[in-house]
Image 1 (tube, one colour):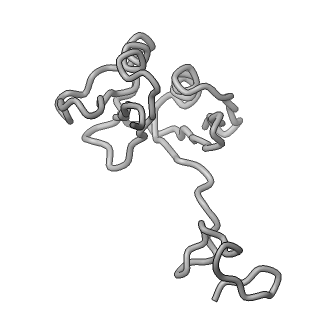
Image 2 (cartoon, one colour):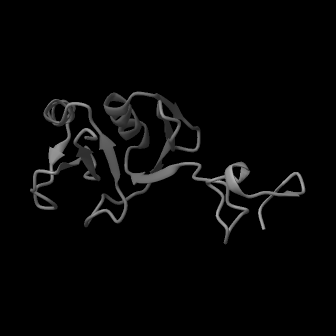
Amino acid sequence: MNTIDGRRISGPEKEHSMSEEAPAIIGIAALAIDCTDPPGLAHWWSRLLGGTVEVHPQGYATLHTPEGLALDFLPVPEPKTGKNRLHLDVRSHDFATAVEQALALGATRADDIYAGGRWQVLRDPEGNEFCILRPRA
């Protein structure tokens, strides 16, 4: 049963993001990315996505994206190995230009992951894969 202020709710009043099975979870706070240089990688992503970078005294950095998603860059001693199990998909309004811009910022192609034409898989400077998607039709 979903409630707001003790009232049972359903239909349009129900929070769409609330899980029926885990109603105490209210949403995603951040996406965490392991890396060897948190401030450097956070600033690289800010050049690609926009937003502001906050460097924390504990050694990690947060990119606050214009859309409101926080990307936390956390320090780890070892470099990335293997394919990501989770990655970012970024939408473009001009696919070819977006790919060119990402490459100019230091991304590299990841055609070993996917070489089709529906999207482009790239790697950030620490090797984390991400995809640039074509505009929505």
